[in-house]
Length: 259
Image (cartoon, rainbow, N blue to C red; front, side, top):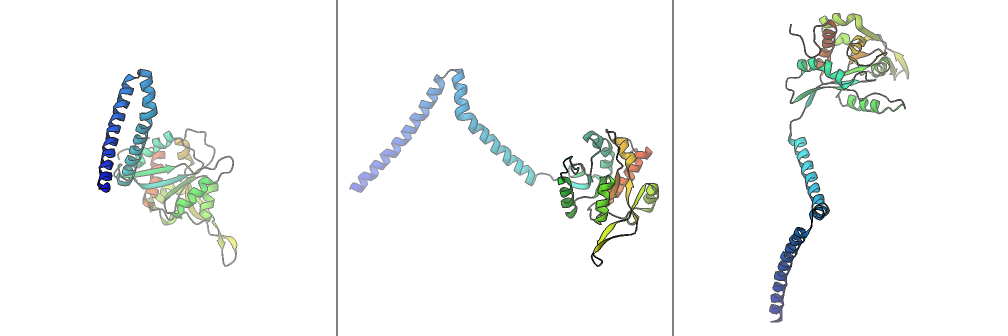
């Protein structure tokens, strides 16, 4: 009998707790109604706003994750590393428009990139170089726009194409007087020393192109080279032809001129 009585008591307490909760909610509403405008705003900030902002933040994170995971992906069809960047963003936009039309079939899914985040700072920070090496190893980079100091490093690392082996004959003849011949200095493990290799055309002098489109007073000479393990070599080669068209006036600043 006592067990049953205990059971009835437990039920009564549960009912009472629900009643208390309703009374508390009613009391909170009555309290809020009794506040003036300033006090209501303070109450809102103290008890409601924080929860509201937290909910919005969580929703934003969920939406971002959904878009990132399930949304459309932009695949690079051309990726150039730019050392000692001579361009502003507006400069790149100016000359890139026509090139995009040549290599991008679907702008919603494909992109061409000129990454200027490879410059060394005045304190000798080599972060840009580390980034370049990592992307190079991952076969993410197709081409290199750089001064001679950087070009030599990558030629000696055997990361740059001999242009005689990859350029079509007509394009090779078109840039022949701009070709830069370099003797690579490669470590010979048998001889255990660095030795010079035969000279070869590893780059195109693009100083005229840089001066044409740069907003700065450029004093350095710049060179364009094609990376050996790039995934989009054909587009890296197309950019050489595109640069020559820009210099020859066959391309407007925004898009290719119909021919």
